[in-house]
Length: 340
Image (cartoon, rainbow, N blue to C red; front, side, top):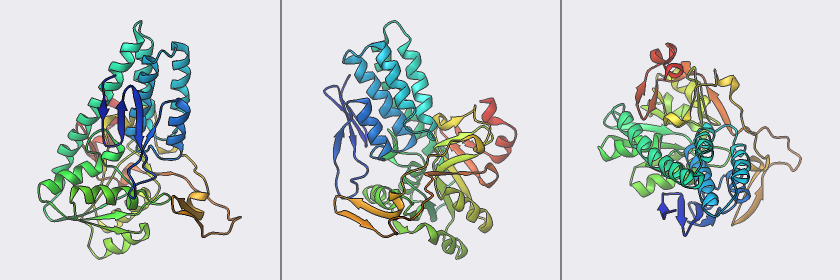
């Protein structure tokens, strides 16, 4: 396979490397992801994260394994192991469905490589389409609030919600971005703040519990978030805390937008109740660990509930910003996601 570079993925000499998103912002560290076990470990540890990026990394690894001579049956098993690595993010399933079709072809090695590279290129185009569609919804002088991380770290392109914000900044429309730190792993504080700083976008970091007071003071003009899965009725699964923001935005009359590529749509999922929600380790919220060591701030035996995602009902969403354009609540109510 040709050499390849995105913000978070590299292919060098037919080997896949990932940018360790657990090491940011203190260190840019590239880690090998040369086996299925390695990549699944990176996904579980959120060293690789972001719904589009997870699907793309899995697709690239399958293609590289095929080029290295892995047998078709072993590739089929690897595909299913990767599919189970992250149950909520549907991009992984959608990408691997396409890779499975390529694997069934006679010349499966060339087909897998071509499909993986096509998915990378398509994701870049999808991100550009989202940014073009979304920027029209941003008014000059906007103070925007975002949750988790939805930028180039999470995609092959400019990002989803953060891609919209970046394009709006380029057009001089952004006065400030409120960045939720985003529990449990502080991906807003560690990743989104870092990306916005790199892009020169003005921002202020806040804890997740501060959003309500900002809205009450009229300091938020719109909320922009991404999605890990969009059900056929418009319900959206995204990083835990998104639902809270949607409720707050509705109460305060603040527009709430979801930006995502069409690969995040799951037309076979009827509603949010059918979306599997990943439960994560208690240690992620009872303390913190990193290259600096470990700190425990909760009792050792504390009982913990730690879902990685929540579901925002369609009724709370002002618009779904896809690469194909903005989908309105009226269109969703009329079944547009089912019909596409």
